[in-house]
Image 1 (tube, helix red, strand yellow):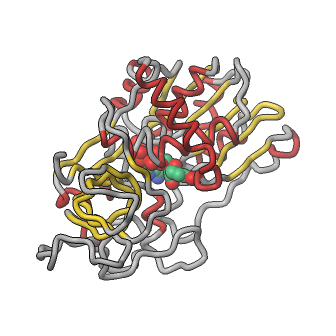
Image 2: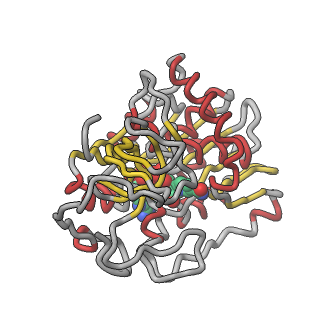
Length: 334
Ligand code: NDP
């Protein structure tokens, strides 16, 4: 349960676990709803934005006292929706609870049983994976040989951006917040180089070390000081895809950027985007990424927390970099 609107970095005590019984394990007749058993729930940084009382965003705030809403993978138990039958597996918006009655069907997808882990449908094959795909191909306009920099590179989105960039023939460097993550970037995810930004005194100098000839594409997941440093290192006609600013989510007055002048002199295109603007590409994304995964050309790292009660800690951990890979909560086994 989301307790109430917050300021600053989210804390576990901003959420609480309530135990109760569902009155009936069935979808009411004539409601169009379906009842699911939730298997996996996704922790996503954008959910922090729903914890403040601000109506002007692209997603509405959570209701204090209500069950947290998020992406998940669920099994249909009962359905009054003609397109869904008991036993179907679906991914889409659900509740942070063991069983949910779902009325909304936007972004709902049926999962075809396959030899792919079902949890990937909130990561590699879900919203974060699609963000990487749409952001990289549609916003970054990549070319073979481009120098690509990805921040929060070992996370749900970043790890796929880097691998897609490598497959595209780019030189790819990632930043992350621990030496364990740096090791994963270089040795499991195939990045050419990676560095721990928390160990760098001077981010500009670090980027100059890894990109002596400058950056063609910066896939920005963090904003703040890293974006400022990247601006100083962009090449002429470079592209910055502003995917997220996780460093700014919990700050009441976000930091200003100091180096925007570089946009003019270097003719840089800096573009914010939302994955939801590209949903027409979802079927193609799914087909391409499933093939790449099955051919062994991409891998995906998850950080699986066990049990609904681990949800608050898992979510809060995103904002201090505790997650190693895509943060998922396993609520039940299929
Ligand atoms: P991640 O799995 O990457 O988890 C968040 C990571 O951000 C942490 O592990 C941590 O990694 C890093 N981080 C946390 N706090 C800070 C900070 N203060 N400064 C720098 N890094 C920090 O999350 P996702 O891959 O799910 O999301 C990545 C970004 O993409 C987010 O900004 C998110 O909002 C955005 N996004 C945007 C979408 C869109 O449509 N535009 C859709 C989906 C996501 P580390 O240890 O490396 O610091």
